Length: 239
Image 1 (cartoon, helix red, strand yellow):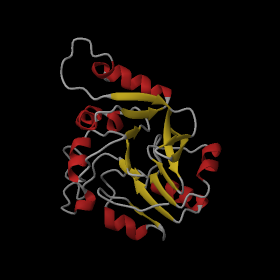
Image 2: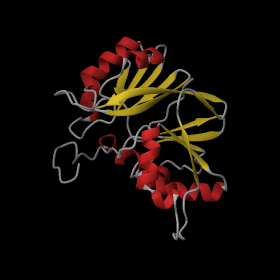
Image 3: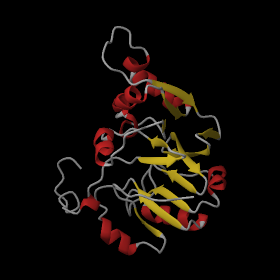
């Protein structure tokens, strides 16, 4: 956190150094990125990402989309448009906030070659079925995504019953968990996220989107078996 001298912000432990939340999913030799964070360039370099075939946008907040311009090197080297999926409000915000990409006019610089695709329900991408999971982030509709036995649900303060039904049977769950307390209007607290994980009976749950007051190792020591904090650079193999 900018200007903060708390012990987590000053920690030298790399697991207490968190960039904005995002994941890269490799399926059938294709890379699917979830969200383009402001640190996307640094995340791509740090993790050796050489290809992005598609992007799934959870929602249109700045911390999840403001790295979109750095897709340009991938679309240039791949010579194909990058498919970017999101709900209607997210796509509308992308077109407005980054009009130079979608309505370039006189702009002559290198632009990302992007094709926007609206998510209306389950769809297939590179041979993998992707099920969108609608959750609420305050008053903002956010999309989580389920691929087989894996689900990713970030920026979430409430999961409607219909969406909980779509998560039944998930074995590996990545879930928003901002802090221990107090309750937040737009994010799950850690106790609320624990309850959801246990209700779904996920075999393994990783919490994401923690705030700076959440110390990695101390928090893990308090969590039930099968639940732990994610960290930058974590790699999972899932079904």
